[in-house]
Picture (cartoon, rainbow over the protein chains, first blue to last red):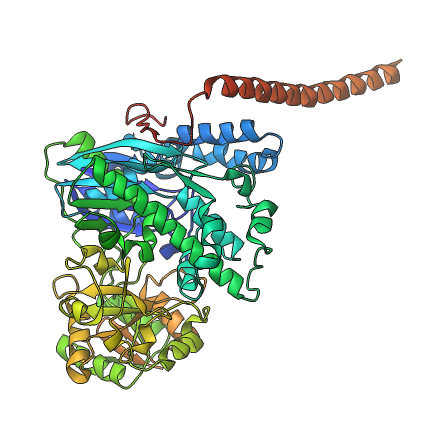
Length: 567
Length: 63
C-alpha cells in the first residue's frame, strides 16, 4: 500500500511517501523551487516522491492531507465575524485564495495531476503528533503538540500506545504559545514564521529579569495546565500585524524596525520572551505527566523547534526520555498525515516503523555530479576511495579552510545534518567572522552550531544522562562544559551553550568518519556545521545549487560526492 | 423615441448593477449580523481552557 502525504497552502509545503508503512522519501518544496518557505502546491516534492518509487500518481492508494481545510475555513469566518469591521481587510485579502485553492484540495489533485484515487484528511495536530510518535522509538508515550495554530487548536495533549494516538484536549485559537512567540519575534523586528530562531540566539545577550514579570503577565496559566493570552495586546486575530500599540506601550518602547539598531531593551525582551515560553511549556508538561505518568514524551508542532527549551525538558519535567521528529513543523505534517493514515486508520495492527534516517531527500549519482561540474567548467579531483577523501578533507579542516560538503540524500527538516553542510574547524574564534564574511552574512548574535561524535558528547556538554536521539537532528541546546569552551570558541554561544548535532557511524558513516579523522589529528572531537546556503535562500538541493553557492561565495573547497573542487 | 428608450435601457442597467452591489453588501452585512448573534448565543463555553480534542468528521471528509 502506497500513501502520499502532503502539506501546502500555509507555509513550508512538503510531500512524503510511504510504502507498506516504510518511509521511502520526503522533501520540502522550497528546496526545488529555491523560494524559502514556499507554500505553493508541492509539484516538485510530489514528483520526487513518486520518482523515488518509480510510480505514477494513480498508483498511489491514498493521498493524506495534513489538516481539515473546511474546519480551518470555519475559524477564518468566525474570526472575521467576531472582529468585524477590523477584520475586513485581512478577510477580503485572503478569501480569494480560500475559494480558489485552499478549499479545493481534491480538485487541484484531479486537475493538475489527474489523480482519481482516495483522500484522507488528518486533523492538523494529529498530523503533528503522528510525525513524532510514529517515527519515535517508543511503544507508548505522553504526547504534546504546540504551534501557531492549526484548524482551531494551538496546543494539544494526549497519550499514544501501540498504533493508537489519542489527543484528549486542545487549547483553541487565539490562545497560542506559538503565536505569542511569533508576535514577540515581530516586535523585535524579525520575520514571523522564519526568524523565531533569531530570538533564541538573541536571548543569550539579554537579561530576562527586567522584563520577565511584564511579559509573563501576558500569559495566564490555569491549574489544569492550560493557558490564556492577554489578547488585547495582540492583533493577529484581525490583522496581518501580530501586535498592536498597546504592547509597545506596555513594554515601554516602540517595536524594533527591521535591521534597525539592537539595544539592550530588545535583548532583554528576547531573553524574557524565551524564559516565559519555557516556563509556560514546562508548567504544562509537568501537569501532562501527572495525567499520563509515562517515562516517554513525544513533542511536535512548529514550536518544538525551540531548541533552547528542548534542551531543558529532561531537567525541568519528570519525563525520562523525549523525542522530536526532524521536521516537527508544518512540512513534517505531510509525513505525519501519511503515517497516521497507514498505522492509525488502515493498518491498526502493523507495528509502527522507526525513522530510517533524517536523509529522505533527493540523492545524486557521480555522473550527475560530473555533468554539473562540466557545465560550470570547474577543475575537480576525483578521490574514489572514501578513506582518502576523509583524510584529505580533514586536513583541509585542520588548516582552517571552509568546506562545502555535499553528499548522499538531502536532509528532511530545516537543519543541515552533514549532507548539505558547510564545515569548518571550531578551534579559532575568528572562524565565526570568517564564515560570516565569506558565506553567510548573518547577524553577529547568531551562533554557529557544532557537530560532535556521539560517544564524546558527555566530554564536551553538560547533557542529560540519556541524550535524546533528537540531538542527531540538531534540535537541542546544551551548555558546554567550562573546561572545553576555550578549545572550540567558534561554536560556543555567548552564554556558553551550543546547539549540537550528535553523530554516530550508523546514521551517517562518511560524515562520522570525517569528524573522527579530524579528531585523531587534533584531539578535538567536534567541528562547526552550518547549512549549505546563503542568507535568504533555502539549503542547496542539487549539485548545481551547491556549485552556484560555492561560486557566489568565498567557500574555499567544495566536496561534491567524491569530487574535490578548489576555488 | 428610440433615443429615450435607449437612455432608459442604460438607466435600468445601471440601476441593476447598483442594486446588485448594494444587495450583495446588504446580504453580507445581514450574514455578519446573524453570524455575530449566533456566535454570541452559542459560544457560552469558555474558549480559553482545555477543550475536548476535535477529531472532525470521518477521515475522507475535509471537515
